[in-house]
Image 1 (cartoon, rainbow, N blue to C red):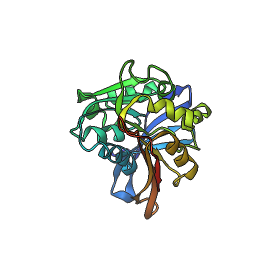
Image 2: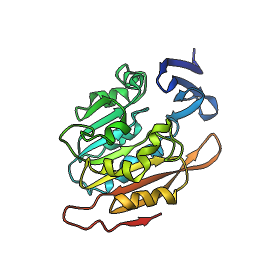
Image 3: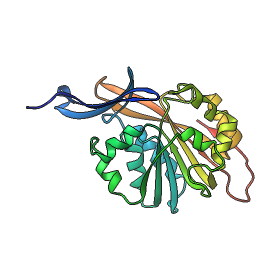
Length: 248
């Protein structure tokens, strides 16, 4: 018998009650969808991942196909990580995830992309606080810099999951992150809000270039398109001045 709703896992975490559930949507031809909830807050769904894909694609496109080492902030259902690994130029990928049960979902095969990520030798899961690591001297791996950091954790720079995350989106927080990037390295960020001129100004202060791209995608539940924002900022190349530009 087809189960139209199933709770696959429930965990108490430092951020609240974390739930992984699977449901079948009859109006979409009995399409199977996985969803993640944090308390009463909806975090992510396998029904919508165009913007998670775009974070990886827009960010890595800036590097022009050169071999690269990448950090993804936030594992979730795995779409940003899988989209990054689809680029042959990616030679290593560290996925930093604060909630250990989320890593467990992938290792236990409870989510559709788990087997793909755990089988890829380029991909490493790291249990930790992305924001604390980004602002620490040792960064994501002591002694290493990266070519790209792709972030998909908070709803936006203004709507954060935990109040302490807000400091990351300041000039000081972004400067600390930039120190862990190679010259010419890229920072890309998902936001569920429209482009934010104030945050773009923060990016301009730290990076050589910054832009915000609106990504639209079909929403079959609402029968119209939805939209999110991807910010892409690039650090100056070695020996080049930090002449900043902002583009929306």
